Length: 562
Image (cartoon, rainbow, N blue to C red; front, top):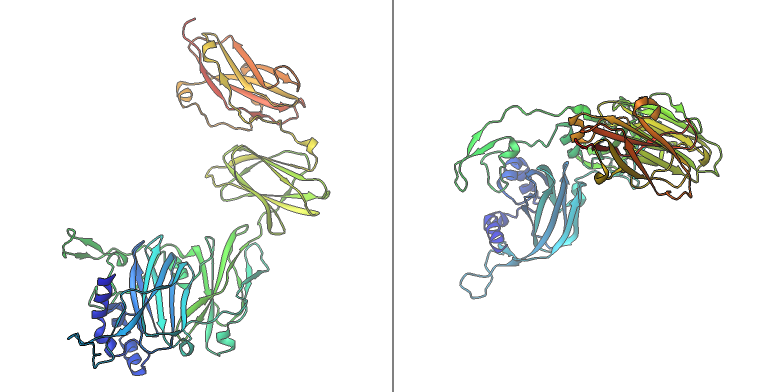
């Protein structure tokens, strides 16, 4: 810390004697004229000018801002792009330098002062939003700003000034900065917002820009441009390189060659940068309009929207509070009949939509989704508000909804699987119509290895505490399937689809029987040295009307010799 501050102070001593960077107008015009050079040749932030630079991930950069006039206001602003930025400000008091002879007399040049080597941290920030530190009456001080990127290499912007009232560097957002989405259809949505005080109160020219995407809300206009360009893009600095503001080879696409700890860098010019497609984000500047209809949206899709106000004189921007919306489904919904099981197929590019009518609000609504082949997700909503959802259904999922209001509820089933996924869906307000048997917590079929012979095997499984029907089936499998002990099968498979010669036995279970918790079965008549797969199905005691559920299959190889 001590060495760093001494080096910085020596590097800017001449600059301080010239009253940089206080807002001397003649000096400010000189800064503005040579802004590009100043930006890259010093780590001292110029007063009243925006500086943009590049950050490597988890690498901290340090900048300095000097306030010479006692009582001056100080505003320091950091604008992230599409990555989280952490930064803090440390205040170092400036004291008068003492003559070198040690006499204690002050030097004649009162403009030469030195900052204290230590100072308090006055503020810390972290996030994706534009953040600012403001001190209405600062003492003579040097402000030390340390900036770190969390998550990725990124661009960022910095602005510091001692005249924020006259500069008004960033346009203001109204007291209610919320953006409202209305008239949402299958492919369009209307966004509206209140005007900026920069336009209505200060009568400065502004324009409004809209950004819509599927990923998340974007907090700054720099983040929008970064997404549209497929990554952060940064202007080439003016020579000389690597003075003050470091020249980062990687950020410009150059590769550094040479051994470590040697200044033998060879620059290799990069190939043409491949940009990401701009279709991922919809961006439009709409002038001074306060409402705009966004078109070209996809049906049944969630979007995040943001609005920015831009001062056209300074080209600086501020963000309104964005939100999210979901467009209406494109296809007509199928009404689910109470107590009826429906089988359907869903694709990744096309979901299934259903409607459930709730008339009796006193009874809970039970919605059951059984995944047969491939994982699916289900979401229940009412007038656009999600009331229940299950993101990963791989077997059987029951959603019970209470305190409902009378009307239609929308059910959406989707899948991320490339191949089609099959599922069953069922809804009812009458628990007696529930078609599935209860399953135990452990659905594994246990093999008694010591009881396995050349022509028989003994297995057992847990049973439920209700009247049910259990059917056992066997099949001969190949060596490959036996070794992997898994096959791609339909978990909604019904015993009626199995071959007759595969059926071993069907048994009825009644609550209160002696063997009510475990069912044991000995299968005889097997072939020596043969690999078998055994499946157990359970159904409610309703004959052929109940829906079957499968236990986890067990694989057994009989002994070669008896």
